[in-house]
Image 1 (spheres, rainbow, N blue to C red):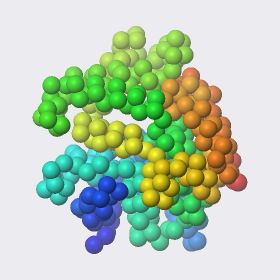
Image 2 (cartoon, rainbow, N blue to C red; image 1 turned 45 degrees about the horizontal axis):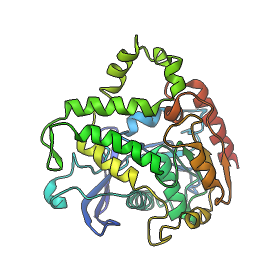
Image 3 (cartoon, rainbow, N blue to C red; image 1 turned 90 degrees about the vertical axis):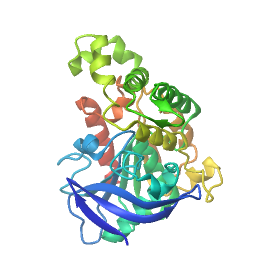
Length: 343
């Protein structure tokens, strides 16, 4: 039986047994979420805000603030933790007897279908004003719009894409295999925590998440680092060690297989999937993002009905879309999302 349970500062939606795209059944699948604001009487003020790679709602809720685009005094905002992030069903918290011999692969298609069912069953929400997301969150926003065209009014895709691009796939291969190269990874599982793997993965990621200009101008000093090596050690060697390594691999799989057309509805026809989107689309890639590139969004624009391309003018690379330390980037994002919500 589907129900919501209170845990810590978030809640859990128990989706029961879910048949995945792969044909496998994920038993006792659980989706965690946190809400802000109040649902209005006609349920027209809903914003869905899914999490990004390795992120939990704690990491992204800073974007929810009065006066900003994600304003809890105006909107009912639901931050949804993506499967594999350690809070929603993940390798780290899923009992093996419930899923067989290994954790089942979960696609964005699977994720957004459970997300939509949660909104309908808990609050009777059938239509959302906006799906806002950064990185993997942006890819989920795209899936919402393509899979439920009449249920989504707007999407804001911040440093995301409709399909994982080949170069993006290759970047993930490097980070993934740095983690898997640790001796702790044996026969497809981690026998213990991969300390060296976490460090190696972080150093690989550091060269992709931020731009060449960021490093040339030594902007890491703004983050309190005393040297480049200090930045790599304090900001990157520990970044992924806070997560379970199997969770990280599970989300990498989801990311690499991200494609709004990879389903029976569109049969792999990406232009058809893009053309089916009825929502107003705001595409905000980072101008110097190395793996979600402006050109990917520009090519998607050719097939979208109502879309605006507004690259974030920032040297923070992919991190431009997660402006925890960049007030100018945050102001740019907020202003454009506010305009989208007013349209």
